Length: 113
Length: 114
Image 1 (tube, rainbow over the protein chains, first blue to last red):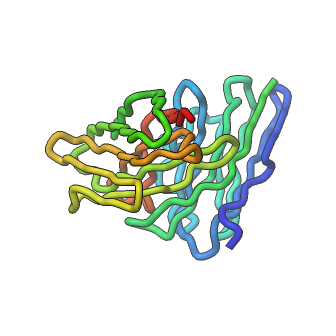
Image 2: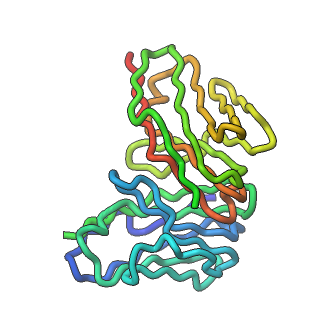
Image 3: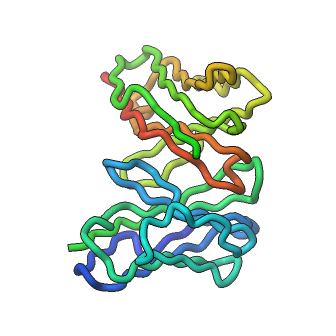
């Protein structure tokens, strides 16, 4: 298996623009997580899905952030409009469920200028 | 919610020596404690984990200990090698991390001096 696949690896955008980050979880995994990593706040859980259903989005910082999982093999994290403080590395992770390891993708480094 | 504290933030040890990283957690319902290693430009990768029904687990040069009463757990790396240089994160979860997500510590930058 190729692991969790995220795209793009790097994204530079201007403030106010819409940004969409994409994730393909490992086949057969039914839990998917979005994390954000910054120097100041470390790794933070933004939202997670079980069987394509959003379970907890309490970590999403603002209404500008939204996430979808239309099917078991694809998820998006959208920021609209983007702001410089959204600059961070965004990770997607997946697992087979309770009491199992979470596998992380390579991340998307987002820079908002 | 859960809060995980991790110390130290930076640790420099001589090659061949041991390294110890410590974490505390706040939620007594947490029952799964993984450790992740993150190399530059890559995502975190699981190196070892421990569940609340055991007090210690070992895998070659890496070991983890858990004290549920005191709510702390530690990572021990023996005979450190240059490739151990990385950022290490501890984490805690109520359900094995696989279903409910992980709360991470702030990370420890481990530097192995030649």
